[in-house]
Image 1: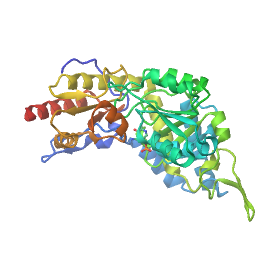
Image 2 (image 1 turned 90 degrees about the horizontal axis):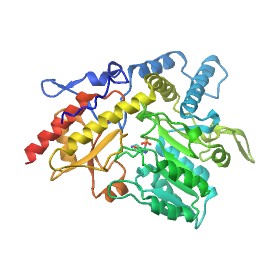
Image 3 (image 1 turned 180 degrees about the vertical axis):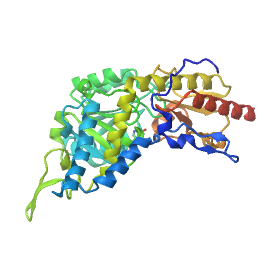
Image 4 (image 1 turned 90 degrees about the vertical axis):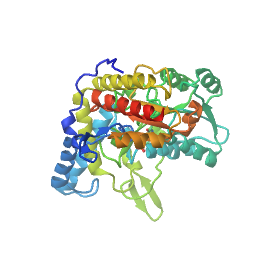
Length: 416
Ligand code: PMP
């Protein structure tokens, strides 16, 4: 349990995260060990301060008023879009649509593009390691439009079956829906890059779920054959309530507005409406303006820390956790052998329900997630109904891993 490929000092300053200072337990004697960053990350002080500053100085609705505060608020919102586009390697911010989160982003791709572009008999390839967010919207599309879902299965280690994908690719799929990083096994599929390339060659569009990956490393959409890229701010030190769908030029051209209302129209009269050009056409109603300001600041923090550095740090923690857990009797780590770069570890403990395991860890101040993590098909393929998940972020440290390993070791002893 002591083999330490040391993770250096945390890339994100822990003092920025007041929740980490909480002491819990009956005597207030235990540090809080937050290992649920894959569900939602902690919010740093500088982000809440940026939001407070914005609300105290420039609070107004956007793209509507012509007064000073409305202009400042509009600038702040559009500035966040520009920053996010640059962060993701998208050269035109107009192709980055703000949504309420990754789930809505993927549904927007389904409703705004696939709904009219695909029809009966078209094949949609869906990777089995996806979160439900990148599965159910395509299943709903299949119900409405008669497309055929072709699963790209995973093996018992959680790796996509490349041979099966090749067979699907020969059938000329119209879309491949893939995860950039699994929220259960925690790593990027070794074949992801070539599946994306093959999909392009086969004439398919690609929808890549970046909800887990975007916080742990650089993303360069200019270098990836991705048509729809979905992500959520709350998994990258921002607030809940905002996410984005970044589109390729060809995808954006083919998108049609899904929600109608204020802000998304250029013209309305008794005969009909003309949608606004650009991302506004997809952002009906008042958006999450303060959350966009928060995301902008969170991106600054991540960039200052260095995305590569965050990636290395988190991967070192995940690897140590994975190795330590694998040494414990009766503990099974899902999805092995783990590729070097992961951000989390999911596991089961023989004869202990994941919810009970999570409750036992919680009693020791170690906060993990238990359940199927909205990835039931992947759990089924891995032969587990549910699991315990410990996930890391740029503020997690070696002590967090130690606390996890000790708490699980005690659980295993009690069970023996
Ligand atoms: N995809 C993945 C891989 C996720 O982990 C999550 C969040 N659990 C989502 C999509 C959905 O994100 P949100 O709930 O923010 O829409």
